[in-house]
Image (cartoon, rainbow over all chains, first blue to last red; front, side, top):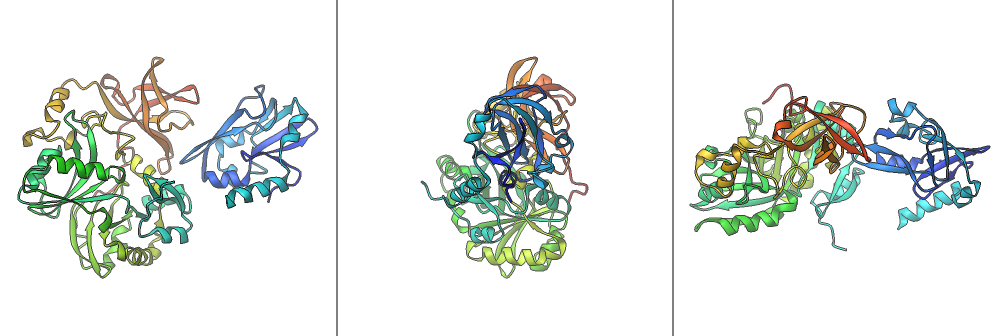
Length: 129
Length: 365
């Protein structure tokens, strides 16, 4: 369910790192909690974010959910498909519905993130709580 | 932690996979299969809602009509037996204690459906202002309420009762046997769609729900939660107490002049409302976002860079496929087409006043 080569946050974002660029989206758990996604608010290429800073938001009929940047960096690409097709978030949260690509400025940030195994354990703990 | 109240249908919601939330102290389903799916089912087929959290009061006695004439702004004398009336309990300032639907069971016998979060307040308010020989009773625990809304509602319900459902007009009701038990059935609702609401003994609520679900299966009935109820009522511009109006907004400001019957004689708040009538400073309007951004409850509203109000209700409208909302604007800005800004995440976004209701069903009953 949760790709093993991705890293995760407790706020339910994922990041896939290749070279010094991280591709970021929200997890299947997050899209399921939100329900039908109807709007995605994304930053612009060139914007910079600190790790833990909100970079955009995902909205369902009922709720707005901020999305936090798992690492510090500069946005080098945004997924423009999400503007026309926000429902991609529900359909393919870990693949087609990536939200932004970020050039990572501080690779040490990655050490703070969860592995897929740790993330799944975290979800189970939350469900049991 | 305070224990959430449960309706008689709680375990059914859980079996159906309803996502349960705390709503005004009640453990209620916010959605089942998905808000958009449920919303569209009501617009095109039918949806079934548990609205048992709503409050019920009974007002009886030889002075009951006079008491209600005094505490509400609509005209009780225009309410026939077996008819329902939308009205408001008003404060001396002409603001809302609550909005409600009044059912006239008999000349001296009224049944009131009030908001869940206001039921104790309303009960105390009416009692405090009741005339001698009016009796006010708190009946919320004696009724479950199930709403069946949508163009197929009539076909789904008619086989379950001897009540002449097809002959029942909008905002009328009947008492009789429904699914084999005593019930009150009214042609009312909070979705802007044709539909009915059934009040029955909570002991029979599960049976009634199941009978309706079975009868509705061929028609594609969907259980619908509070989220769909909210988007449906907003498309129909039906107001939500606590969001769109409360004790700080008057009946006229809420654009409900049609339930304000000055000609009926005195009622609480009449003087203030009369004074306001010719000098209304703000009024509730419906608006549409011109871009993709969604206006949400409480987002700031600005005109020429100046904060004038907040969004009282804002949401995507699943059937209309627009982003709509309600807000109070200065009366000189109320006309259709007027543009203003909604502040979405610190960014002003253009909205414009549009005609309401946003949605109107094609064939009114």
